[in-house]
Length: 385
Ligand SMILES: [Zn+2]
Image 1 (cartoon, rainbow, N blue to C red):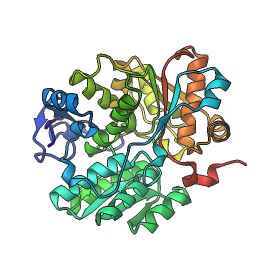
Image 2: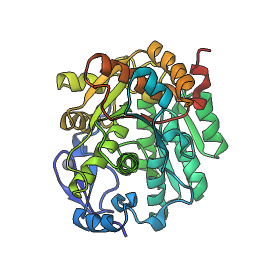
Image 3: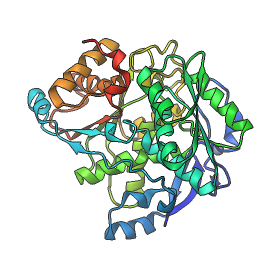
Image 4: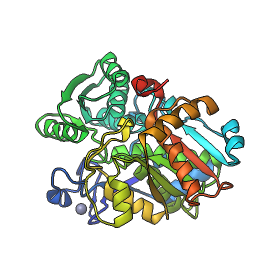
């Protein structure tokens, strides 16, 4: 049984019952202007005492789920391995470095965690169509999980989407609309579609279940280490994975299971650095021209910028920029040193670790988790052999 209590607006604190609202705070979202980060994103709050009692009997991550298990789609998601890449660790003298390999989800991406929960909600509500905007991974993920559940996925993507992800979307039978312009244009097209059609919208952060779904990766990291790591390194585009990982540890702390938070290191591509600049200056501006080889983190207006930057402040985290050349070089290095072929955004995580070590933000002996969010096989044109 779910221990969900209410949705709570991160801006004004107003609470809503489960089905009172499905997306943003109805009051705060009125102030939202297209082309700026979302306002009125909702966070789930739970009966943490009830969770703590159940957790003592069985440490089940689904205790922290908004929805009952009976609604989950019939395809396993999550429970991905966390391991020490020994050769890499010895080579760099980093004895406590771990990789969480979320490329081993059904569609090859961490995004399946968000799709799983949104599709579960569609099953619960008896809704047949789910619409989503994506740079590629969220779309291929939604197409995959919808296929398992017999739901129709309606996808808006920018024309620049890598072919591997396009193939995935089509092979799973989703309805595809390519949008001229950027991911941000696709995001707005998906909003317009769901405003005029009977469907659920899976746009990241707009639907708060996307944050709650991605949270499960953080709870698994805690369970697999049986400890709070010193650092978790996360590729950041919209800021939703970072927000979800933060929420995992906030929930674990609220239930009295842990007593402190890990520090979060956000890694962005140089040209797609709106969250890094916001974290540095305290003032938000859109990225000017977010062109990067790491398409998964190419975002002009990060939907969850406000929550993500707050997470960095609350955890004493940091944010760093890396170049496309660093990403491509580290993608090859990781593939040859660890056996894991990650997509460019996940290679960026390692480039970010290098910078954090150089800056002495991270100490070599600390317990570090690198989050690998997607497989390199989705975008083989990015590779320079
Ligand atoms: Zn509000």
